[in-house]
Image (cartoon, rainbow, N blue to C red):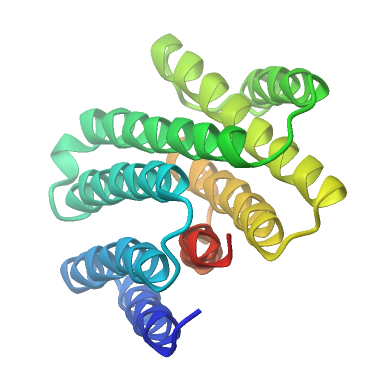
Length: 228
């Protein structure tokens, strides 16, 4: 990777850390602005990484689409911090945008990495596990949101299974980055689900973990373009 790619990643991390600090101080607007800048940084990392080694255009385009949908999801979920009256509408829409982003990531992985049918079974198991957890912990979601979350977690687990199998078969830097990014993503979204849908106290701690895992996840997934 080029020095510029590392510099952009460092700037993205700086905005991410600033966002976490602002959110911990309940400064929602400033935190939202820093989050948007960090989200833009993900896309910049992928673009610069590709221009340094333009070998796999399809993978690059698919990852960029995934990151752009993630950026839109960030915008929608960020707006709810300063306009809480729209929270009930923005959370499902933002989640849907992230879901589409994960679909693009999966297509990118299927295009580049080896596939095993068992990964599909693991993905389905992830959706079933999400359904059980929602029921057991009495999470505050309606029927439509429950379906969305089950599909969402099914895709997250499928991503992990795909990249995990790729690491077992190839052990390339790109596959390793994609696997770690996918694992961090599911940890981040699990913390976010706890914040959004449970009456848990000390939400700042979960928000901190969510943001601290989300940014490295997106950076690693973006860097997989340069590492491919």
